[in-house]
Length: 201
Image (cartoon, rainbow, N blue to C red; front, side, top):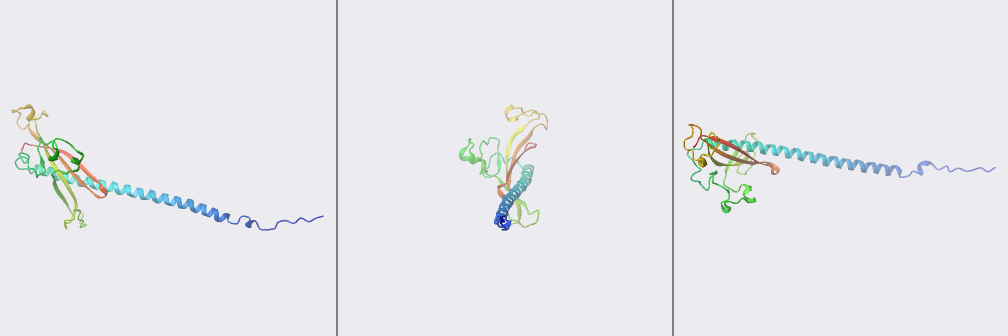
């Protein structure tokens, strides 16, 4: 009777390199997941930062809008007539702020190239920041313009159009359109408008 010899080589020799291959596969998967997670975190950080700067720009613009409204309250006389080319007041007849292209609205007219009042927000938080580089600490710089929208009576009619020269006492008011602009980091810009109604100047 013949004795059969069995292959007595250890099993692990048949699997040489399999563990290393599987480890490399798992390492690759973990690396991809890690990079993906880092990109998601970076994107969320940018989104949170942009929201913060947009909110800051909105808050600053509200501050400058109030400054413009206070400007109207302090107006003495009528600075809208005659119109002064270098001030930030504009009469009702103003069609286009760009005198070079009067009567025509161009895309370049929408970049605030016209005359405006500049306001500096004081260094409220006391961090010594200097946004405009004038060596004075401030938190923000903003601009505003004021448009005289004319006189209205209590019926909402423009007195210059209706020609009604005998309205009720106290029925005529003067309407102003105020536009304010401010910005923050990362190109965050905000423009706000309000309507201010006062007694005639």
